[in-house]
Image (tube, rainbow over all chains, first blue to last red; front, side, top):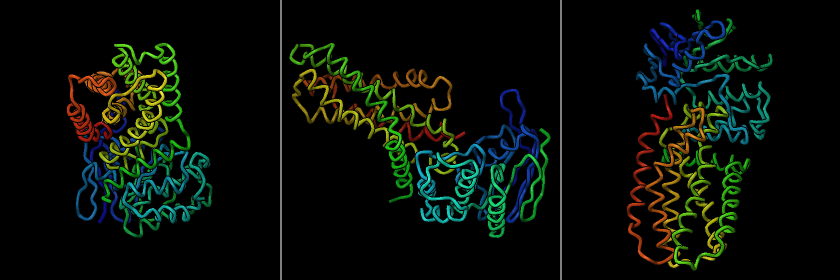
Length: 202
Length: 223
């Protein structure tokens, strides 16, 4: 069963201490909701969990298929969504997803299907998308490779009410198939599945 | 096709697709090379027949190629950082395949640049070539080394502040052996007089930089 756990994570940027001894985790079908004010370390925590940032101290364990993944494997395995995740502006939405599908060894048709699910046109240049449409594209990108662990930083940002409903359904489907999710948001939000909450003090 | 090769090919195709739509590197390299070429050719005049002609023109040709590459190739990774696409790449790509795809993109860019500028340059300075086959081989081998070293240095400077300066400062010492060999072999190809260096050291230099790149790139690219 997929799961992600982290224990006693510490991270500084120069003299600024961002994470100090954060622990938590989520198992299959579970959501860990991480809340906290701006600058409390939510995005840093998710970047550490994704393997994009090395913690100064502490341990991250991601288990998929009964095996604990190395940081390099973790990077490629997670479904990551964050506000700073961007796409190639000269390329269309379909070309962006087809490119990443080839990198991940996934059928490029998967990208087209996901674009339909999130309600995006296939032939619009990524540079010509609204912020809400970019957020939908981030969702499609994060789910491209059927990830067992989702790391979602402000997953509802910039979305209109139909968009929020849509991604809530998408998340519910992922949890039903056994994925685990860590969600970061400044304030508590309604999420499907079994939700636990951790508040970062900052 | 293996998944590793497919990844490298995907990076190569993506970079070219984006380049053909924006033409940023093509315009930068092309404009720089043609401007320099015209200025140098007009200043030197038709010196192909003079005793020092082959030496001077070989050195100038490689300087033009070097500075054109320095103007365009740092963008290989800087653009990924500036447009925030680096995060998605870090999460999706195998580092060595990414390095190979970027190297192939830079190499094709340099070969295209050489294919346009070299004949133009030789015609403008009226320089006859004794061994065209050797000249093509040296240009190709030199482009491989230039592209490999530039790709490696480009990732090192991508997250730094003074990227342009740092790129040049780090790249030039790495490229000195390549330039010395390439200039000597180009002079041999042009004049027909044997150089004090063979093609093998140039090929070995290329192989060393590529192997070093494949080994070092993952550590430089990922945290």
